[in-house]
Every structure is written in C-alpha cells, then in structure tokens.
Image (cartoon, rainbow, N blue to C red; front, side, top):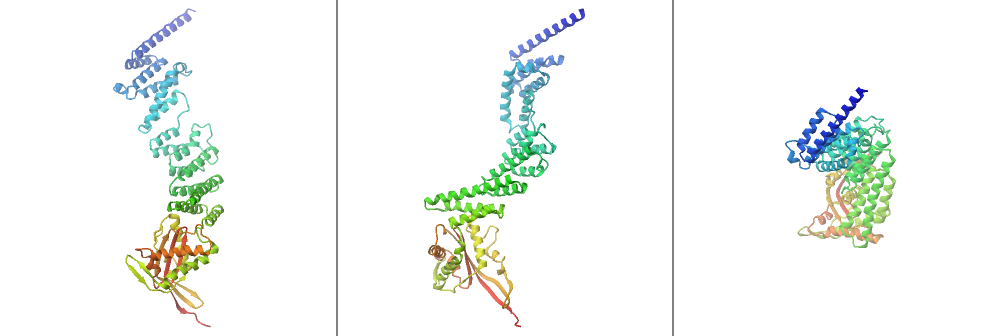
Amino acid sequence: MRKFILILALCVVSVSGFSQKMKKLYALYNKQDYVKCVQQCDAALKKNPDMLEAYYVKAISYFEMAQSASTYKDFTKNPLLDCLSNLSILSAKDEDREILDEHNDTLLIIKEFAENRARKIKTANTSEAQAIQQKLASIFRTKKADGLEFARLDADAGRYDKCYSKVERLYAKAPAEVNSSNDNYTALTQGAILLAENWMFSDLFTLIRNYKTKFGGNYAISAGFKKALLISIDTARTDDDKTLFYDFSQKGLELYPEDKEIISHIENRWVELINSQSSAYRATATHERTWKDSVLLRNAYRYLSMAKEIFPGNRRFIDMETKLNTEFHTIPFDSEKQRFQKYALEAVNKWRTKGCECDTSEIVYVAPVPTIEWDTTLERLANEHAREMFFENHSEDINLKGETPWDQINKTQYKGTTYENENGLNFVQAMKMAFCVGYGFSFNGVYGDEGLKSVIDSVVTHWITEPKSQNCMKVMTPDITHMALGMYGDKWVFWAITKYDILVREKKKN
C-alpha cells in the first residue's frame, strides 16, 4: 500500500512538472519570442519525447515565423515546412488525436495557408509544393498522396516529361490483377485522362499501346484509357485544318479496331463536322455567295474525303457524298457526263475555228487552228487535279505531291508506251502539253442543257479573254490534238496534249 501511494505521488509531481513546463512554453509563444520558444520546445522534447503538446507549440511558433519568413532566415530556411513537419510527427504520436482535435480551428488556418502556398509555387517550386501536400495528407490523415497527384503538379509546371514518367511508373508497377484495395487504384483509372487533359497526346497513345492489354481485364482502368482517347480525339477536332483530328481518329481505330463504342464515336464526330459545314453553307443561300461562303462547302467535301479514307467503304459517308453532289451539283451527274464532254469540246473548238485576240501583255492575233478531240486519260487527270484544288482550296498547276502537269502525264501511258491493236504494234506519247486552271464558276443551282452549256462557255471564254495571261495562247496552241476539261465545285482544269500515236509494226496478215 505504501508503494502504491509513492507511485501515485510521483505521477502527481510529474503531471505538475509537465503542466508548468507547458505554461512556460506557451508564455514564450505569447511573448512572440518564437525562436526561443522553439529552442525550449526542443530542449523539453529531448528530455521527454512524449511531451506531445510541445510539438504543437513548436509547430505554431514556426507558423508565426512563416508569416514573415525573411525575418527568421538565419534561424530556419523554410518555417512553413518546419511547422508541418512537427504537426506530422504529432499526428503520428497522437493516435487518439486528442491534442490535434483540441486545436482544430488553428490547424484549419494552417492548412488553408499551406494549400495557398502550394498553389502559388506549384510551377516555380514543384518539389516544395509536393512536400507541403504530403505533410498535409499526413497531418489530416487524408488518403496518402499518390504518384498521380505529383504528376499533375509536374503537368501544371510544364514538366511534361516528368509527368509522363510518374504516370507510366504507376502502370508499370501495378499488377495486372490490381483492384480497388490498391492505394493507387484511382490513379490508375485517371492517369491516362490526366495526359489527355494536358494535351500530352503522343505520350497518351504510347501509354495505351503499352498497357491496354495488361489491364484489359480491368473495366475501370480500361474505361479510363478509352475516355482519355476520346478526349484526345474531341480535342483534336478543334484543330483548324483537322489534320490532328484525322491522325488521332486513325490512331484510335488502330488501338481499338473492334471496339464499337470507339468506332461509333469517331464516325459520329466526323458526320457532325461534315454536317456543320454543309449546313452553314446551306444557310448562305439567303444572300449572294462570296468566296468565304464557298469555303464552307469545300470544307464539307474535304472533311468527307478524310472521313472516307479513315472509314473506307463506309456506306454512311458514301451516301453523304451522293447527297451533297445531288444538292449542290458539285460535279456533273452521271446523266450529264456525255453532254459535259460535248459542250466542253464545242466551247474550245468554237474559239479555235474562228481565231481570236489573246492579251499576253501585248495583244496577239491568233489565226484559226485545227479542232481537237476528247481524251479519257486527260479527263481523269483533270478531274483529279480539280478535285484536289477544290478540297485544298488552291489554284496551282503543281499538286500537293509536288508533281507538275508533266510529272502527272509521265505516270500514264503518254510517257511513251507501246501497245497492240488489230493493226499491229503501236507507240503513243505526249509530245506537247497545254494546261490551264480556273475558278469561280460552278453548277450549283444550274440544271438543264442550257445552264450546263452556259457555265462551260463562260469558263472557256474567261481563259480566252483573261487580260495579261498565257491561258488564251494555251487553249489556242495550234498543234495540240486532244483535250479534257475537269471540274469540281468551282475549280476547273483544261488539259491538252499533242498526242503522237503511230503504227510501229503492221500486223502480219494470214
């Protein structure tokens, strides 16, 4: 009994001594002698590491120093981190959170200050911002910060290589059979999306390609990959010339060639894009159309062409093209093609048979010259070039591949080819060429023979009467023998050659 009384007396003395010591520490804090307060806290904790409230007093002293850090730069390099470090130690030791809960109001003030600091320096000092967040997570026992949170800070700071490295590491380390009990599970479902939201598209495609199969059995992670991919495609859709949209659409189909959701999403986005342009052009019918209006229609066809390349044989896009051609008469209807050829020959040969004056900077009189014939190979080349001009909105002789008209001719039999027919062995070659491009005339709203003939006559007449141009002389070149006229929308191409076609060896008669 006497021993129990002695132990009880010692405990009372110890508690009394602890209380007196804490009063002294608080007194130093209240006197704003923060440096001495921290020093005394250290001395007290050295004697008694379990004097938990000393950690709290030390932390709030550092917090006060953080309000004017430059004043205390000789004592502490980073008073805010020192504050949070001590609170983190206290959080680990104060298992029942008695001291922390008692001072909760003050802790919330510190938390708000620290979060504001982290936001301000996240681009300039990512490591400190990350350290602050780690400490806060420890103090308030929130979910431990994972690699994705720090990756986001790197992305915000423009350190995209480090961001991707952290995200990729998450997927590399996680087991294929990972589930929601894993600390990084949420990060694994959101990592790809983080890359997409920060326009890290090349890294995103690499990530999906490398880990799509590994996590193919996990619905949430796979869904994150797909959502990120669709974000990238929708983001690229805002690209002015739609090159990225085209590339990303192809990459999406390469990554998920059998996924109906992905395929449908990409297809629908292209349909919406094409319809938006054609609808905008349709709305311009209320006034006299200008070249700016025609760009809308060209865009609709250009995007349609890109969509057909992405979805070859897709009935939906084939039908869209048919409907656009029917509505806007962009090319001659099948029923009009023979008449188109007839009127084109008549328009050109009319000028060639009567002669004309050509303005080449000087007025040159050209006497009548021989008529010319239609050529189907030139027709194909002319229509292809007119189509490219319309889709790409240019009026140049050289195509997008850098090929001149002669380069294109030399990819056909007119480069110089032998062939056989009922007469024997023949040789054919283009010896001379004439080439003109034009724009500004279309069949939009034009129907019937008279309308077709009028537009074609206007195109050829423009070349003949165009001032300070060589086009008139090209159309009137005396020794050309064959021609074609190609058109698409408001773009036109006249292509003619001197066709050298001779019988090399006559077929032997039986």
